[in-house]
Length: 411
Image (tube, helix red, strand yellow):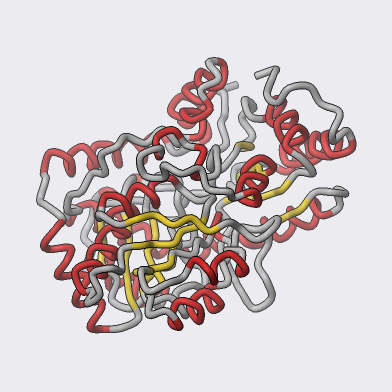
């Protein structure tokens, strides 16, 4: 029997027919029509899309003292790196207790006449409370950029001035690497396009590499192919206790910037019609499986508040404490069932961000969130028997919370 590996996220499976054929609709036009995104533009990554957004605001600012960008203390390190690459200053806001939203009591005093933008994050497809952030930002003359890198297809973008998404490997729609950027205001959308033309270079060497990677991704993004492309390297990293590599948090200092070829956009356009049904199926599976997880005492399952609708690339759980989370991962992280961590640390604790965040801010809620969070893949390839095994392992870990040896000692 061939070995199988479940991906850590539920990505839309690519088809070979996506790579060729005639496509009369542009990807941006299809995204606008299908997902109600106002005139989106395609960039080479979600990070590049964020850099275009920040560069546009930075160039347009009348008050040159507006040089601060407020971001969550627990998010992708690339967000902080993008802010720094644009010559702006990172300001961290701690999370609300047991949640990924900003702590409103901390966010308010962080705002000032120096605040250029605030970036709330729709983490793991769950929808953040952007309305509250937008009201606070407007009172200080700042703009809101919604980080929807993990939330393509969710109901987002209503309150933010700009929204960006990721098309990276394993996302709902993937060009292997890519991004989407849009804005509610038409004049701002025009400014974003002009900025992109100005700062994003034509680099055929990098784009050719992405094209080849997309072909390889199409070949490997199946349970059997992922065993070799993802499973074996992850297990090797875990044996070496290189958790940054196991998660994929070991980002190089350079952020690649280049224009996306028409061919890769066409690949995305041919795959996009399958996305609505895929999102529906993963939503239904997630709702069913979250009900099973809620039966486990002391386990917090992160879901959307009433009136919000996200997408479900994976399920996010908060364990009772760090030791129970790490003891569970010691049993399941190296398994082929798609159980992992999201980001390794709160942002102040990444060595790669030492120059960007030189002061180790006090962000206890973010550190607690990072220490207790784990994710379970919502891939349609994760069979019910494997999911039940995960649940039973979770039940045992929660019941024994607080009685574990050193975290991840057995990996």
